[in-house]
Image 1 (cartoon, rainbow, N blue to C red):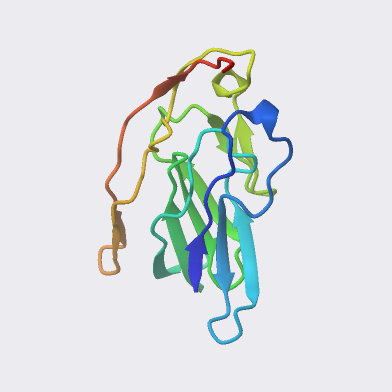
Image 2: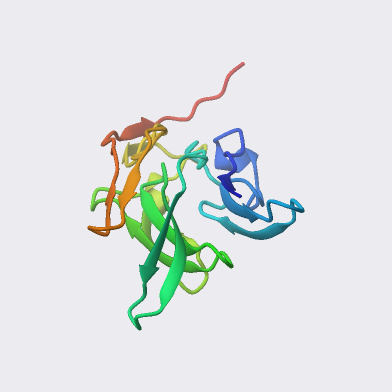
Length: 170
């Protein structure tokens, strides 16, 4: 069984230290025992409300060596399309949906960690303009599909950015 977990709160990163383990995570569980087989955290310390619980597409594809692989592909609200080996949760690829994604410069394929651009962070002392994607995400709750004959994914994508202006409430 494959599913995603939601985001931590509040968004303001200065009020919530740490990676907030198990939030923003793709889990693979044994359907008979419930045992977690793997957990891959896509956005440690999510500060934008990306809540990565949306669709997980399953496919069987050949890798570059011609070996069959069982894959899970997840277009996340954070603007990254993740592909994992669904047998063990190892990261196969993590690519921006398009070049306008700016909260991350890239995803380190060795560690699986996103490389943040601090210009688009949500800290208390910072006005961030044109954060892409917005809290709605580049991919939200729409359903997607995979065509195994053409080896193509079909996805609905939003292109909405936002500004972040922190302020204190009395």
